[in-house]
Length: 247
Image: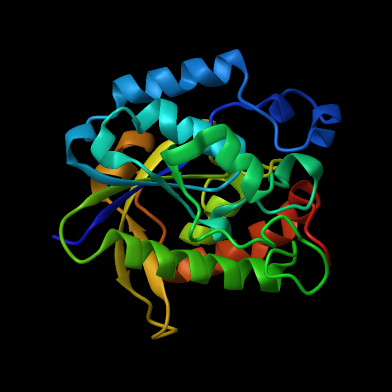
């Protein structure tokens, strides 16, 4: 059995409360967000099978990962992966420097996969909020997760962001009109790796039948690869203003 990746959108942060709060730099979780982590912790059934924890280096994702999945010393440190950060260059989606993260989280986190320049999201950066850069970053993140997960039947919990998770999974089904994501706060979906038919240097993330069944009516079938490509073209164009992606 290949590794299983449990992907999670972070819990509610203060930037989720209002458009005005998106001006907050690297905001914390709200009290409701902390409760959402506790609820996910109670509902998640694979704690004893987890071998690694991975998160975007933004504070809300680190805290979600720690509160929802942490506790066992064997799972620390949480591997921080800078390619998992959120899409836009808004203050709320721009992280803290490595020294600040180390001061706050100490030996709970592993910063080896976080570049010093990870908070720089300007023109030419690998973190620039353009479709081309985001597509390339998602590919890089998938390859890194494949490497981190290894080749056994390990299970890994990965906490990222609502907008970026669509690029990471290349799953564009279920995004509401006038919304930036189809992932709710603390939603968990489970995936396994598969070969990419279009790019031998890439890997795909395919949602497990159990995960799909938890969140969809029994009568609904997952989109085919062709349907996902068609959805991608339509939904990406629609999401641009909500994700603050540059033309």
